[in-house]
Amino acid sequence: MTDVENRLTSLEQRCKSNGHRLEHLEKQQEAIHSLAASIQVMASEQKHQTEAINTVREDVSRLDGKVDALEMKPGKRWEGLVDKLIWGVAGAILAFLLARAGI
Image (cartoon, rainbow, N blue to C red):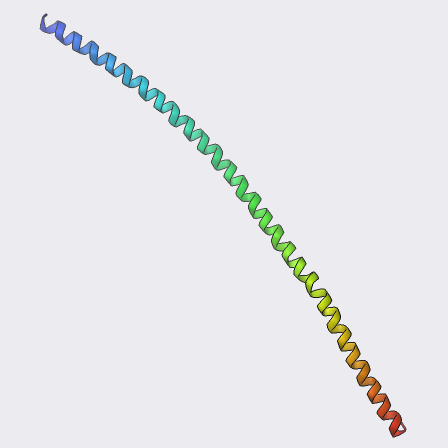
């Protein structure tokens, strides 16, 4: 074998090796591209889920305020009733005292 043949054989082997490496890299590149597309879809879904969660939180906050108002309503009624009862008793006592005094 001559030097040229040796160099040509070496060059062919290197070309085959590089061809295999390129095929392997192409497969990896396709996998990376597919992964990036999947991550993009997941990020978009995550954004929509976050928006939905925020909407639910706002709704729960509004409902919590309404529930608090409804819970306080019977207490306010009771306070109003007791207040009127005290005024009624005070008025009756005052009327009794005024009647005793002859006024």
